Length: 215
Image (cartoon, rainbow, N blue to C red; front, side, top):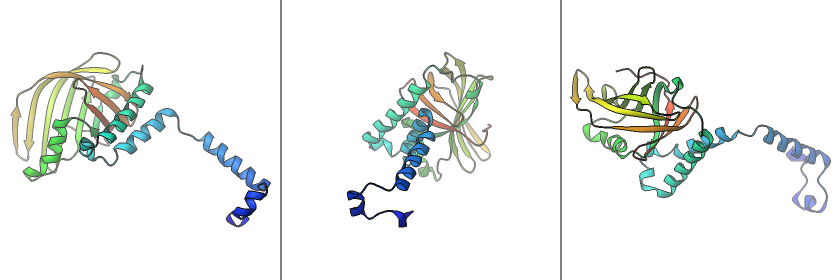
């Protein structure tokens, strides 16, 4: 195709050949026919924004990036308005991609002080069993998890009550007392990701993990 293209000076003075015009028209039509639906485009935009943010650690010092990410989350929330995100499809092992929750980010950032590194950060939800585990893994053997009871409060809101917490290593376990209650709302959910805001106005983006976490 490049050998058929006229020089720049020729193009400016003479109408483009009909073959060039036809090819251009087909290309534009093809791109239009295969454009992403709004939900997919908004999701891809959000995932691009958080891809290099180290689960939110880098965003803490970048207000502009934070505003962009929250704006992208709000766009997905608008698309998900009126949908049900608290049915049986909420039951899954969800892996954190990005968050504003300072406690989780503090643990992720400082795990190396204890000679380890944080692995996957998970939400393990069972709507039928009315349970939620918030989990931070420390491969190969460590894990910190908080058990909660849950109640479905609305089509998008889940209330939770902490019941216990456990810090576990290889061959040992240290129980901790429960410490509170709250709620979270899943504003958008599909078969890949979920966009969440909680009682403390923290934001969370999680994906369906390729495995199921068990205690």
